[in-house]
Length: 222
Image 1: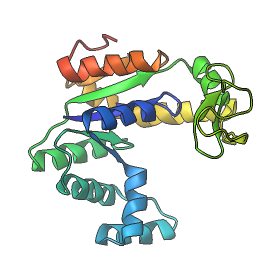
Image 2 (image 1 turned 180 degrees about the vertical axis):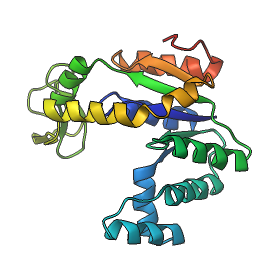
Image 3 (image 1 turned 90 degrees about the vertical axis):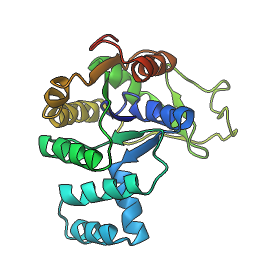
Image 4 (image 1 turned 60 degrees about the vertical axis):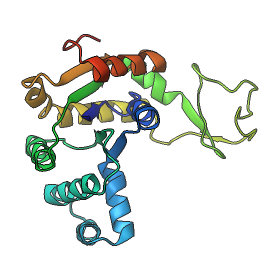
């Protein structure tokens, strides 16, 4: 199974992708992570990417496609792949189709986590993490059991991301809409797009995604 999981920052896309990886043994292909790993490994594609990045230029679609192709060929993806950060344009969507077809695969689902911008802003602005173990918390929805003490490791030090503010959320939403606008119509025309309420409880979202992946379902049914 090969899917694209879409959603703006804060929608819970990372959480749901992590569940699919742990519960279904799927592989998450994040272009950002792949680029960093390739540069660190010194592979031929990584060296090409490093040269481009050091020159202050954007990594080309051909380099990203090569990275994805290498990862698909490396094995361990029989249970399925979650594409994260690619495609974002119509040409990239065409490139992904070609990459999959060359390997006897095809795209099965495009799952978008829909959000309410005001509620998302509250979700993002209120979140913080343990500075030691990284456990996540929220001012409203998930405070430590004992105020000021991490439930997991007992640390009393916490941190917040400096970009977790209302202005940044608005910018991220605008960027997300701009990046997904070119590709959604392509996949909608093929009947691959399913939408899930990303503001629901984590378990509810996971359940809805599970129904889609296991049984298909009707477009816009969730």
